[in-house]
Length: 223
Image (cartoon, rainbow, N blue to C red; front, side, top):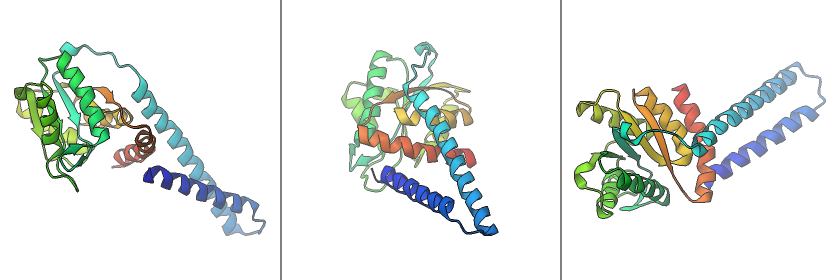
């Protein structure tokens, strides 16, 4: 919850500063300019936050319609390990992926995720192990083990599909529900026709990451 707590604290500080600026009666041209800039900047932030969060929530809870016969690949995005064990967030993605793969046994799957701090193996390896142990044919699984963030997840997975001779593939991205909007945006940037399937995650983790996703979307948009 650290990110969410920090976000709340920063907003409280901003509101205190704005209140002080509004209550300050000094007739200063500089103070007047600062007051206008701070209020304008914070209002712009609130407007963008509400807009982006609305898009993230809409994507998370909308029921996307697609024909499974059109899906060329499933991509499951990594989300952290505890040693070799999937985090609760990653487990939610794996559970959603396993259900889909068992119902659609002709579609190959890319498990995408490198090795981060505190992880003894790559996220891709951990995901592949889980799927195989739960009945997914190992021949269906393709490992993308170099990525360190969502952008690289989609970039490297797209490159692997191109190397396999697939041009403009249609993919089903399986990730956390709060992560679908940004993942699909990035997939489109790399020429993928992307659909999404969201896995569940613990409530407090979800709240924290809904807030964090706003900054991820803004970062990707700016860069």
